[in-house]
Length: 397
Ligand code: CTP
Image (cartoon, rainbow, N blue to C red; front, top):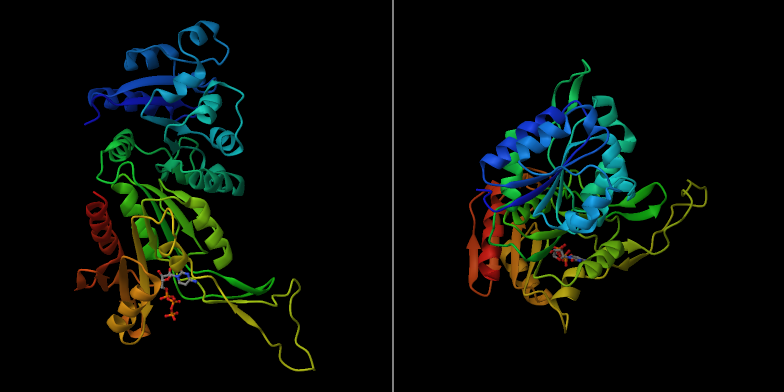
């Protein structure tokens, strides 16, 4: 399954480093070539000899090893692999990556690489839950770094909770899934998701009930078929999926900017529930109750992001998919919406409260295209996503 694939494995300094020895063995068994890099701290936990013996290859340890520079410079070393895996990824390594530090071989390789990067975090539960680590994690995710684990469980330090490194076979499965040649390999796809928040003042905003669950599931399904996904999300209830480039926004205007910055793409899936209006007179101070009466809000219409992309004269994505959340005359309204906006497909759904779709885990959609109207049975949002991703793959083939 991994025959012919080349993994650059960076082993950080944590007690879980012993699992990386097994990981090397499992990868080698499956035909992968593993080039190991051991950090200084990593050497405290596993020996260079055991790592290189298992990998059957030279181990790299030092940025200033001139012999290595002559043989293979650190830039080249960072780019020869199909995937860079950091396991265990310690809090320190994650912080270095998030901050763009390059003060040893591992961090320099990670900054210089143009190869996808996967981290397998392992650390004490308090370190994992610390705001700094969670901030770094969010940064790394939005940089497109794939994150595997950590698992919950008892730790070497005696504490219990998230922070245990994923088991070697779980890491192998994630690597295999990532390197699988999916039908969307080489395709760049934009997905918008979640609601937007339109401020009234620093503490109040106008929003809607979108949870972001459907858009998140679609982004995940597209990535699992090998697409490079740019995921532009408003403040959603669900966490963004792994393995996609995440751009977080608050307002419709910010979403439009992020979408423009993501272009060109092969396809765009506009699942966001963008607020139609913004408050023009949003105050930079909290509005106070007053004897003089109620505040009055003035609105301006937000740009229609989907329509703007559909009507691009140059560089329009080959496939543009809109969503239509309706409460009445679903097919009629969605059909008109597709024509008005100019999108290729529209995914319509009935979001009347009785359906439980908005904010729920299921969806019942109607796909409307040039080819007609197709009602899909009610299924989980994940299944809708996988079915839609498969359709997209077919359309872009
Ligand atoms: N959309 C968008 N930008 C907007 C409004 C909507 O990109 N400012 C996109 C949504 O992401 C969705 C589609 O347009 O893919 C339809 O959104 P919807 O809210 O159903 O349609 P509206 O144009 O807002 O029409 P209405 O609210 O009148 O039903």
